[in-house]
Amino acid sequence: QVQLVESGGGTVQTGGSLRLSCAASGINVNTYAMGWFRQAPGKEREFVAGLNWSEHGTGYADSVKGRFTISRDNSKNVVYLQMNSLKPEDTAVYSCGASRPFSPYSVHEEDYSYWGQGTQVTVSS
Image 1 (cartoon, rainbow, N blue to C red):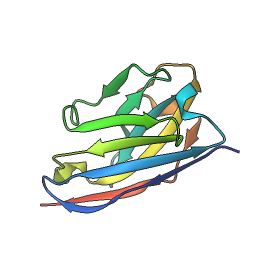
Image 2 (cartoon, helix red, strand yellow; image 1 turned 60 degrees about the vertical axis):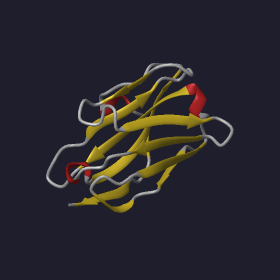
Image 3 (cartoon, one colour; image 1 turned 30 degrees about the horizontal axis):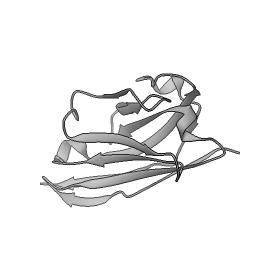
Image 4 (cartoon, rainbow, N blue to C red; image 1 turned 180 degrees about the horizontal axis):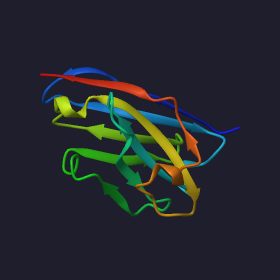
């Protein structure tokens, strides 16, 4: 059984930082394309960052480029999202997803097979 468990959310002030973690079981994150998405109240879920199954290849939404970094620790089977210079518009529930094995990441949520429960990030002004 595949499980993805996010942690690390919380409330920070504008300009602050958070690191989200996505701990996986039932799959090896180094063989899957992984992604982070977010959903703000009243809005659809949107792509934030993606990581190819191989060591190379990442992608970001324009709104977070230069501020967020996605990475992976294969030894811990965890995917991270480092978020710096946070803005109030980054407030949302952040979820990680596992797409397909041995594939590049996708910006489309329908391409993801497994999802975590999400973690709330709130950025106060």
